[in-house]
Length: 490
Ligand code: NAD
Image (tube, rainbow, N blue to C red; front, top):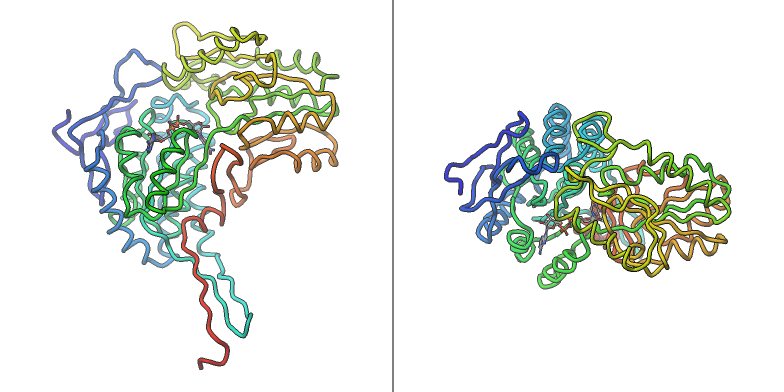
């Protein structure tokens, strides 16, 4: 119980507000929850964070309704300026964000410093630029002047997961704010800290009170209360399919559009004509960040004729990966986020053993830390649980194929459809296979790099809707067609 708000915690030398930011004020809750560091779990809580409840949710939505009246009415130029100021401030706090996220979630500190904090700033810049360059579609038809206007939709709840929390939060918040919606951000309870830094920066950047609201707490508590509020106009969620089903029900009750960016079980397909070493290296690297990456290619599908050579190279590259403390610049593999998550990963591997799947390497938790060994499993069949379910850990499966048709069939054989990686040196095959795979994103001979204006999202249980560029802006807007009869006005 914390009785003085605003309360702050010292996290690795970074001072972090532990309350909610509602209507521009830091406020608390009668209860708190602990966040612990995966880098030193037994050291006790890193911080005690306000545990939002139904009242918090109701107050935050009311603030977002007020905030929308101001933020939604601002010119796009003013909104874009505020977002660029926020991006500048993010860049100025790179070190703090990297240190806090690494301690809170276990993310590799150097990756934060060198890539993900900058990407967070870029997310705001990209959307700031998109709104100022947007041109309305205007045309003549049916003896009328037609114009399509994007109207800001209204108060929006943004719910984010624990993996890569800073980058993913900015990716979801930027289009909502750019469209003119006010937001209530609910970060995950396993990694809540960098959202607080972001919240403070929105105040510093001059966002009007209530434009950006932060609510901390447990998903089933304050998260569920938020998504049930009938004053919302949009809900956007990134997380697991299980939670999406709950949120979808709440959204349907109030007829609120919602998008869901969910799990993945991506194939990494290696053809005999591929640059084998590049493919094997990329396959080995699918387990950095402990495989806690929705886009990871976790099902290795390899042409049978090159299987032995591929496997040898895969082992070689995996042997080179350094498992360690995320603060150490030499570390390649971070620990798992939470003991419960590591146990969940281990549960999949134990059931695979019982099922008769062959563990080709790894397969155990690491003593003395929250790491899990990089693990490779040759499944008994394509129906094995380790092939069909997202494990979200450093566990890959490997299967062979005899033809291109079989490779595509295996690639498309799960309920997921978020992303895929293909290795081939044939341009024709790249086009053919890339187009035949059912997924929101297919990378050929590369991974993760993409233009932020491209659509991003999944098929099947990997999600509903598309983020990225104009796709997210259209979701966060109400489109209106204005029609004026020709010659009826002067
Ligand atoms: P999760 O579904 O458990 O939680 C996500 C968020 O939802 C958290 O903030 C949580 O507090 C909240 N939540 C939980 N129950 C809720 C409820 N009833 N109502 C409202 N909010 C609720 O997911 P997670 O374990 O945090 O994240 C891992 C999952 O996210 C994986 O499946 C991963 O693949 C997926 N993911 C997808 C993408 C993508 O872009 N497609 C990106 C990152 C992670």
